[in-house]
Each structure stands twice: as structure tokens, then as C-alpha cells.
Image (cartoon, rainbow, N blue to C red; front, side):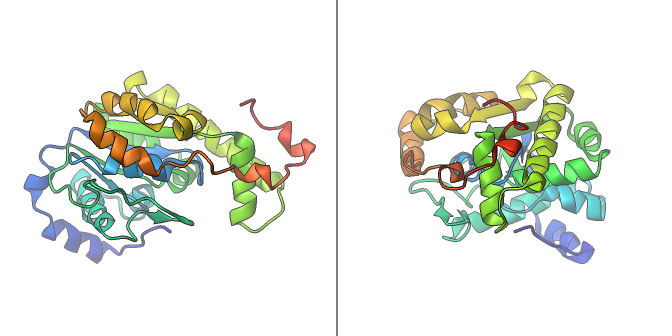
Amino acid sequence: MTISLSRSEIQSIVEKTDVSRLAQIKNLILFVGHAHSGHSIVGSILDSHSDIALANEVNIAKLIVDHDLTQQEITSVLLYFSFQNSNEKGWKNSEYQYKHDKGFQGETSHPLILGDKKAGGTTRILIKHDWLLNHLIDMFKEKIKFIFVRRNPLDVVAAYSYYMNQPPCQFHVDRYLENYQMVKTISQKVHSNQFIEVSQERFVHEPARVMVPVFEKISIPVQPEQLKQWVSSVRSDIKGKSETIKIPETLRVQLPVF
């Protein structure tokens, strides 16, 4: 789901937002890549930290295109929707629930890190509007960071097939390749410390070990016991969709080696 807002609704959010809550923001994080790749569970763990506020399904990139948002409008909208994560439905995506015990999801009122978890949607908007990436970099400078969860391409294509209710086809492969090319473009345009890549395969088996450097790269300290609680819901037994949806060889050969 993507949030749809009118200009008057955005203005109302800005007017309700205490600017002091936005004064300490060090980084804006945008998730990029492919839908159904593990961004939600990674994002929900970050959002559990008391200094981090991540909106779940906003797609701020689309709102920027639609309404030419200012920096204050962007941060106000993201903070506003991050508060929705305090309820049980806040981090429920697809068939999975990502609400963590003893976390601060939806409760961070003065964040150091603010962001949007809508990876697939953000990437599609960046592809469609080729000026937007430079616009974001110019607006936020070194404050902007991008997180990409890398998953087996076969699982991504199979997930497209499953959630679009279509047999695997060239459209799914093309979408994967377009998104992947945009991710590579982003990684080349920003400094290395602004692009964070997470291996989904490693993450599901060693979530705490994988998340520690992610927190380090955004300069947010995390207590080991807290992190242990937040990652306890990560399931290593969930199989990729390619286990049950077979990708034809004519499509498989077009995908990058994983």
C-alpha cells in the first residue's frame, strides 16, 4: 500500500508537527530495491530503536513527485506516519507481523534517524523520474542514506509471480533488472557510507550479527540485549517463493548470479 495525500492534507500534517521534533535528525534513510525481499523485517528492527522513526508504507518519493515537497514537509510527513507503527497493524505487511516486544515502534518523537521503508515503490518512482535521485541528494546532501536488502533474484521474481497472481514471465524479470540497475546507480552516486547493503540470506540465519554493522553505519549505538529481543521474531524457516514457483530456464539465465 502507498499513502495518498492531497496538498491540504500535507499542509495540515506540517502545521501539526512541532518543528523541535525534527531538529535533531542526522540521517534520512530510504529503502531501495525489490518488494518482498526482507526490507520490512529489517526496517521494523531499526524502527524498534528509541532514536529511529521509520514510516512503513508511505512512498515519500511519490509524494515528492506529486507535490514538490520541501525538506520540512518530507520530514513532517514521515514522522507523522511513523507514529502509526505503535499499533498492531503498523508493521503488518503481507502475511507477516513485524511488531516487536520491548521496542519503540511508533513511539520515537524526537528521532535522530528518520526514513521510509517502501523499497520497491521508491525504486519504481526513481526509475520513472530520473531527476529525483539527484534532487534528493542535493536536498539532503550527506544526510541521506540508502538501505538495500539483497535477496536471491529467483526468489524476487517468484515473489512477483506470486503476489501479482501471474505465471513467471518476462515482465517479472524486466522489473527485477530495472530495479537492480537503479540500485547500482544509487550505490555509484553516493559515498560508500551512504549506501548500506544487507544480505537477506545471512540476515535470516544471523540477524543480530548482520544488524550490528547496520546500526554502526547510521551511527546509532544499540544494546546487545535489546537487539537480541528485537531479532527474536526473525524466522530462518521461511522458504523463498522459488521453492514452490519454478522459474523457466529462459528467464533464469537473464538474472544475475547470486
